[in-house]
Image (cartoon, rainbow, N blue to C red; front, side):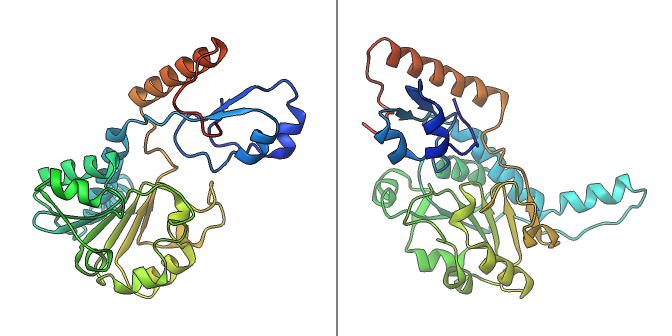
Length: 265
């Protein structure tokens, strides 16, 4: 069972008795699936990550950044009493990129704060348009141009690497706050740094980075960046749920059954 460690061909070569690799989570970009396939090793994940936990963190980051909670806390505990002018969210437009289970859960939370919801998803957009009257499905350029806040809820694929780059950032309003609880590589961090330091957008609140841990990331030095250490799904409830999936999948394989979440069938 792996989480964030890299499982490459060198590791597999030393694991001569290995039959199964199972990711404690969804993303498997740290596992060399072709190498595992060549060695006849099954690769699986636990796709039913609790979307509510990730959506909770996305909303927490959005609110914490907009109300400058970290700065306010640091002021109080340091013996000061500085007040920080924040930004309200009621009536503001939240653009949700990625309308899967997590994106829709973010929408549910933002709706409770009275936000106007728009969304973009090239695959689920039409389904959401038919099923959700509270989310206006729009083209990507319209979302980037009109959103006050943008929540990224995309899987990491060849299509989504660098999805938020210089061109996307150029289209955003100067006051836009981007929240990323998907994958670090969805955002071009060099372009994000330029946008933040140049006043192109107002802020970046992220749970993920291109390289983790981001010990040498220039983003960490910016006052308009709020970050957490990839804890989107990391709750007691989610850990138990994922553990149950791992056990069920392992037992199925060793009982000669075929689970539905094999990634190299």
